[in-house]
Image 1: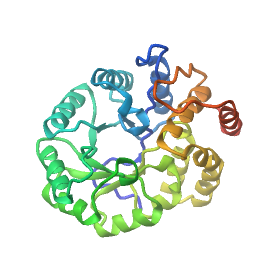
Image 2 (image 1 turned 90 degrees about the horizontal axis):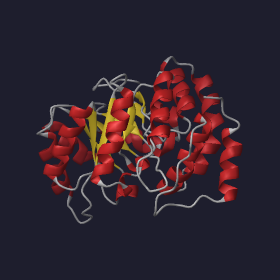
Image 3 (image 1 turned 120 degrees about the horizontal axis):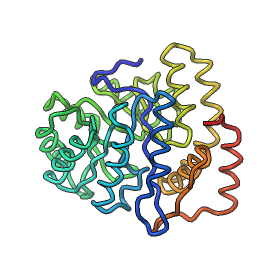
Length: 299
């Protein structure tokens, strides 16, 4: 457990994107999130993934969110940026921009071409990775993105590039273990799924987790407890946040809509406004969220 080939490991909360009334980036809760996470000694931060609502952001607002996070972070902790541009040149150029802004490593999403063969996806990722002077991973989440690579395809990509050292997955612990074994433990696995199964994900060989930010502090304590073999404490802490994680994991948009409200309420900052289209939070759903976060420690 806990081997890291890239040097990156731990809990990397995906930064939620908050919006003002006009649908523009609302910086106050974003900056508060980053500062609070760093104050809790988080191992790193992540941005521009699905939980950052990147599918709802214009190119201008992608840059604005990235700049807000980088400016607040000031290189205090490593920053992972998910790259969702739909072409090889687009991904290369966005990585260059993000690196200049202060990002440290990158997660490539596949282009939205569902009929692509595995060899085409490997070649696409390879063409990007070949031009990047930094650690690069891919997001392998077929249940969210519609397609992805097999473990054999991942290994093929690893053999081509010495800087391909990380992968973001959305697996259960058994599939994480299978990936770890079939890639000989030579790729750092960061799982998502909101942090679900975290103790067993780590036992399976994952280097870390990229969850939403609403319960980052307890996930961090779970991870740190597992690192020092205090597994009973890790399991106890995990049980504290499991009800909230299960409520949020209905869908990506459900996670985003309720998760960022949960975090804002824990931080005692403005929740901002929903951006269209998005799940409209119900009074009942907000009552559930409040009841669940009332059981969590104060931030």
